[in-house]
Image (cartoon, rainbow, N blue to C red; front, side, top):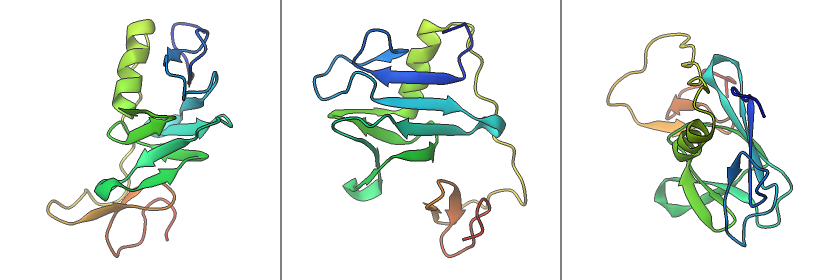
Length: 136
């Protein structure tokens, strides 16, 4: 892969961009893709033990393909880490890798003090309000 990858392959295989030496991690476990507007797409590569996003309260959501943020905690097999840690590891391997662009903010600025939740589409929204990404 070049100095500025658009996708990071994560897995146990030494050829992966981010190698995780744990027996519950598949050789080619998951892929993190840099999308326009600063979005990150995490895709499970048909791993044996699955890829999950850890939710507040201790529950988990299985990921087949989902938008994630650097603050999200994910589990690949039995290895738990934040998306930010994956990005930091990638920057050690690819020092010239640019920061993902900041998300383009559309609509009014976020309101401080309101309770937020993650929509099924992966966007963050105010509880009870329609999602700014998908409208649900």
